[in-house]
Image 1 (spheres, one colour):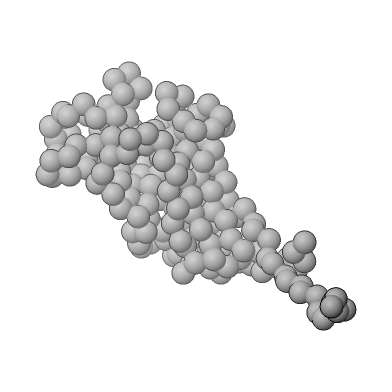
Image 2 (cartoon, rainbow, N blue to C red):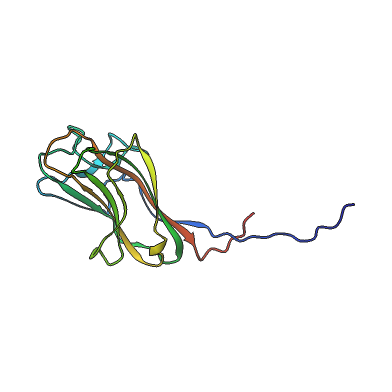
Length: 186
């Protein structure tokens, strides 16, 4: 016995907004680059990338290593990113990491500042190499509504040459649920 339709289900979903995106195709853009004590190893490269043909690299293209017989360190810092109007913010990026496996370990970190770079909080830290370019996701919902900066921080653990490639970053994207969009789901 067929009956009339009793109710129609409707749902509203929020659109995902791209708040910030950089694929490093046009150089370092508004990222600031710091390093030392001798070499600034962060730069644009074409030797390893995801899309379309360039990425940011901590290392030397001439040797495909970050070794320089010093205990080096380097940062790339994004311009300010406004997370007003979004919630459930999420950072994603593609990266390749090749570092030494014995202590003192090299390290790769992603840090966030919500106070114009006065203080930084680690939101991702690794001392493990990857097998290739991999996509990493980091929940930044705790920063919703804030103006933040991202910092990719690489530190070499000692002053011995090891011959490792270093860190490649590509396709940095920050998304969030758009709180102003009231579109209906199909």
